[in-house]
Length: 430
Image (cartoon, rainbow, N blue to C red):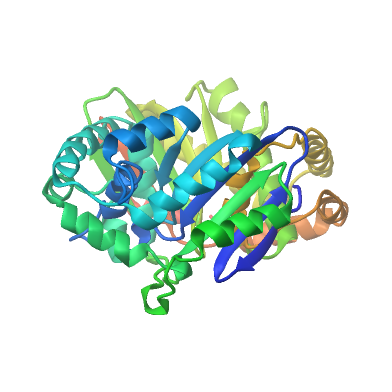
């Protein structure tokens, strides 16, 4: 983890990291809100805005803008999540000022043509159709929404088809003006460029973004729903995509806890580990599986994902429950803990600097607000303790909240646990 720093330039937040391994830069101007602030009436509007940014500005028509982006930044892209909506480009430092010029024009001066909006709605409709066919993505979005007690939780980042097809250029412009203020904006930058030069360009090109404190919409409190439930999305596919998730309590500002959680996930995912052997080597229940985390603000979810036939689902869930209970009762074997610590150290030694790290720094700021140097990271790794790890996972990462199950595919209900059985399986004691 290389060190990045946060600066304030006339109210514009800048994350900066100098990288000297090549003469390139990466820049992400970012609106620090996304679908998190939407509801049933305007779901998908931020993602639609992302599609429209870069098509036309007050200074350049659609053809001129397309030609300029293609000429200088052919890898220009943008993305939207629940948390943020960001533009992105990387290029030679020779094009640095051109990058600031183009991005500031997009951020400050975008206009939305009615005909272009109608055309883009058809594109997004197709994106929604494609998404609906990606069963793993559908399962992940649904397991997330099952945990959140908030209006947007009913919808995806893409929104509903009927909404997308009904949006007008005025709707897009209204959302644009709602987001466009210093309070909702940050730039993440990494590259072989001195800080003084980057600060000067930020001030020159972005300082005219208005400051409208009442427009700040990224401070939204989210709470877990507090219920255990099962959701089945029936699809005519033979193999089901299954996610079982439960809340856990890692403090994102406590780096030791964050790393203990990483050690736990590494163990659960390990090749020829206990879960692997139970699910695959001994019983042949799945081809692959993985355990990972989802988080929106302070809501942490530990996910167990696998693909299998309906008839195997209950046994897979029992296997996972047994492995977690074994960890809860007996802890992680000492030799496994030491091996994983060593692997984390090896992984850090292989870290290669790249301008694309700007993406990672942006995520660190929005989600952790902590930046570490290599030395600081090494010191934290060296301070990790085996007994403390087992204590922490027992108290904070195993059987710590409600458990939800989402299944996408052709399911026979006799093949899945009931809600009561699910709760019993993931209690602290069986």
